[in-house]
Image (cartoon, rainbow, N blue to C red; front, side, top):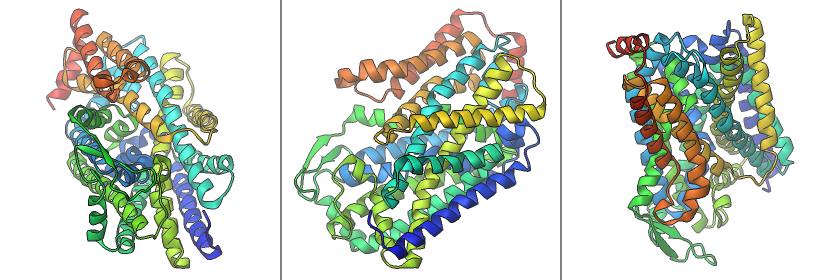
Length: 520
C-alpha cells in the first residue's frame, strides 16, 4: 500500500501509542495479581461495564471489522445479516440464562475458576477425567484460534507498511504475550475494554467518513439496489467477474442455509473466554446491566460493520477506492477506507491510525483471552488438577506464565504461513467449542439428572462430530451442506441425555449443590 511520508508517520504514531498503552495496562494490572486465582479470574472483581465490553470484545475478533464488511461488499447482505441475527440472539440468551447461574454455580462448586475445573467440581469427578478432556479440547481449538489472530495482525502490518509478514506477526504476538503474561485476566479484561472502545470509535469514523465520500446514504443504497440480490435476505449476489458493477446474477439463500447460519449463535454457550467473564463479575446483581450493554453494543457494532461493506462498495463506484474483486481483498475494505482518510494530512492520518488500531484491537482482544484460557488448561487443569503436581503460590504463577508463553510460541509457528485462512479457522474453532461445551454448560446448569458419564459423552460426541461433519459429511453437499456446529450441537445434547439416563443418577452431594444453586 503506497503511503506518503506524512500519512505513514501519522498512522505509525497512533498505532505505536495504542500498543504502548496495552503494555502499560498489563503492567499496572500485574500489581493486583496476588495468586493464581487472580491471574486466571481477576479475583472475581470485574464491574458490570468491564464485564460486558470485555466479553464482547474478546468474542468479535477481526471478523467484525474485516469479515462482515467484506461479505456485505462482495456478496450482499443475506449472509452477514443472518449471521448477525444469530450472534445477537446468542449473545442475549447467553447473558440472560447462563451468566447469573454460572456465576453462582462456579462459586458453589468449590470456587472453580476455570471451565474444566467447573465441570469436574460440578459432577464431583474425583478422577478428574472431565478436567483432562475439557482442558485438551480447549488447547486443541484455542491454539490454532490464537494463531489465526497472530496471522491477522501480521497481514495487517505487512499490507500497510510493506514489511516482512513474519516480522510483523512476531511483533504483534510479543505485545499480546507481554501484557497478558504480565497482568493475566485483569490485563486481558481491561485491555479488552479499551479495545472495544477503540473498535467502536473506528466503526463510527469509518461510517461517517465513508458515507460522505460515497455521496450520501441514498447513493450507497441506490448503488446496492442496482446489483442483483445485493439487498435481499433470501438471495446472494454473484458479481460479474469482468465488471464489479454489472448487475450480476444471484444464488438462492434458502431456509436450510439461513438456519445453518443462525446456528452461529449456539456457539456462545460454549465459549470459555466469554463464560469466564460471567464467573468473574464482582456483583451478580449487576449482570442485568452488563447484559443490556453487551446486547446493545453487539447489535449496533454488527449493523454498522455490514453497512460499512455497502459504503465501501459505494466508494468504489464513486472512484474513491479501488475495486476489491475477491473474498480476500474485499475483507480489506476498511483498510482501504482508512488509507483514503490518511491522504488528507497528518491529523486525518492519526485518525486513520486509530481505525487501523481498531482492527488490531479486535484481533488482540480475542487472542489474549484465548491465550489465557489455553494456558490455564495446561498449568491449572492438566498439571495441577489431573497430575496433582503440588506447587507453592509463587511457583504456580511462574508455571502459569510459562505455559502461556509456550502456547503462544506454538501459535506463532502455526501462523507462520501467510497464506493460511484466518476466518476458516475461526469458524471451525467456534463450532468446536460450541458443540463440545455448549450443551454441557446448559445441562450442567439446568438439568438435575445430568451426571459425569453424560457430561463426558456430550463433550466427546460434540468435539469429534465437528471433525466428522466438517471433513466427511458436509462435502457430500445437498441438505448435508450445513454449518457443522448445528448437527454436532444436537448430537452432543442427545448424548448427554441418553447416557445420563442409562447410567447411575448423580450422588446426593452433587444434587444438593444443584438444589442450593437453583433455589437462590
